Length: 172
Image (cartoon, rainbow, N blue to C red; front, top):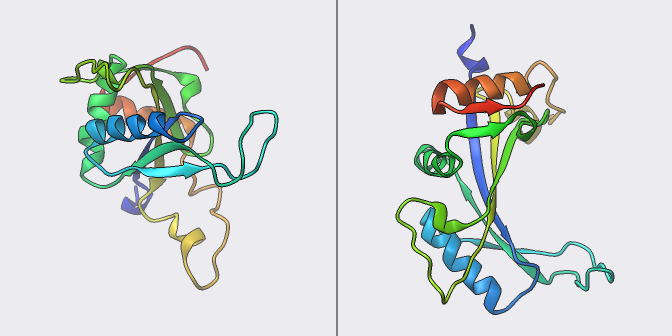
């Protein structure tokens, strides 16, 4: 097999949505910094929606993108919280694997802090092939990523089973 066809984890994104600015957002920032050790970015609303009572550019959450060497350590601790089990529907056809954690205190070494409260988070693992996704990002003649280069759902499941001992629950 061509080494450029090998599957790798491109990035892991950790997101906490709080829905409002202020004190709650600052607490979510603390939680994400405690867990990842990285400085979070504030996410803002893209469009005004009167039903939800949110305005454009209003801060509503925080996120961190983890890349390179930090991925393995963080992903192992996050999967430990989930007992190294995931449902098959957590894997998409677009090259991502997503799961949620309901309470940050489930991580090893984390204790409940009454000043912070309880925060859950969403974790998205993005996969790619070693030599393929540059096609869409390059400056000259960018193109859509061909189907044969995209990472298939079954390949992601196999990768997670082999590299992280993940047990996948639920039928196809």
